[in-house]
Length: 42
Image (cartoon, rainbow, N blue to C red; front, side, top):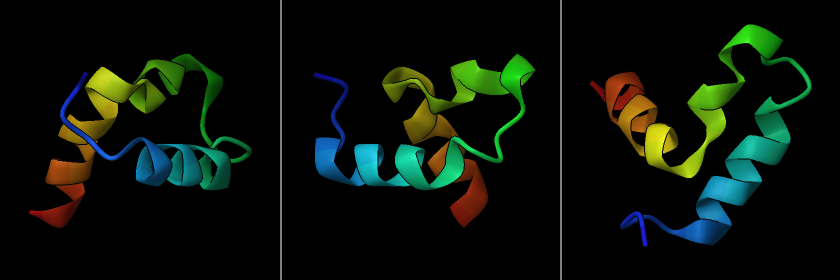
């Protein structure tokens, strides 16, 4: 639906969620995750 691999998204979120700031939890939503993944790669 969001043009991303759901398995990759879920694996990344599970790895990052424990250390992720609660006030930025929306960064981990599928429609925001793809954008943040592009920023990290750039």
